[in-house]
Length: 249
Image (cartoon, rainbow, N blue to C red; front, side, top):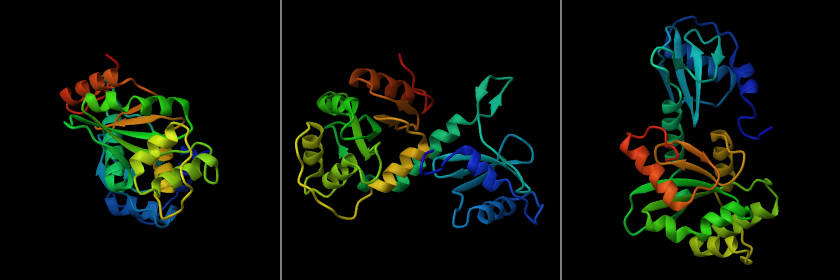
């Protein structure tokens, strides 16, 4: 199982507990979550389109909780009449909120001269397609795509990939060190306070199962490598559609 948010079932089991309050308000929902998961505070609790059900955002996750705080479920809420997924746009917003909360200062950023789009990339230094993506960085920058890197060493803490990520982060010039490491060249081993564990946990919570995993500026997830021109078309479509799901042209 994944280390953070180990499974939807385990979270459901923890949160599906009765509470004394039966008031249909946010306090009952917040109390239920606080009782089941001490220290976890929802980022937002709002009414859902379903009567008696609230939308609860925790980091990049969205749950539906009964207003009496007794029941929780997770999944896509579909408007059958309009054939519209009502959950995914909220999830996209939650993902961007969690990434912004982590902050650009905790990422390695490659900026184009003229920025048009932003793409968050969860990367493993030793992943073949991650290296391919990075080797084409000039193409992404030419398309006006700002690449914001977050580490996701798939082998986990204590692995060689993890140690490389830490060494890159602790280097004086992180961008240059990352490029060097992506080429398979040795980076001087260093240690310092770093956000690798937090980045890894966030990637897991968003649903990363491999690398690279791209999260668009609109919060949509693109699993795997996407060439620069294709990614630019997808990001343009997303922007033109007001942040709605990016798609392959």
